[in-house]
Image (cartoon, rainbow, N blue to C red; front, side, top):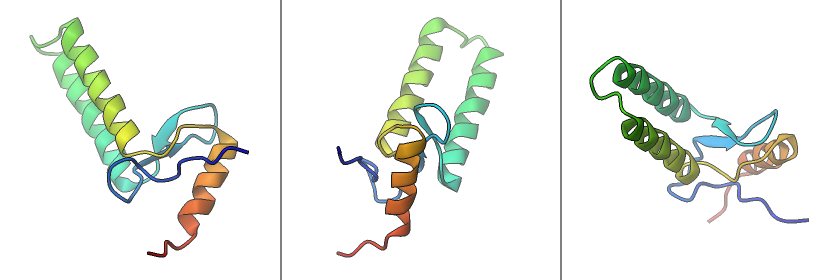
Length: 94
């Protein structure tokens, strides 16, 4: 059975973790939710201004995805979520 990455690539705390339903990542911390809401608000503002171009939208989407991948664990579904939650509940010894 392959071992799933349960920690982020950058930092110690994962802001995004495996989804409960489907496959991918979802916010699992307050910081993750704040980043998601901030990118959503920025997308709304850009959509309503003269900055609204395909490349600006692609750049914002790429930035958000890169951020989620760097501050998240490995993406996955329900099984990966159980492994992620078990790893988060285990105290880390250094």
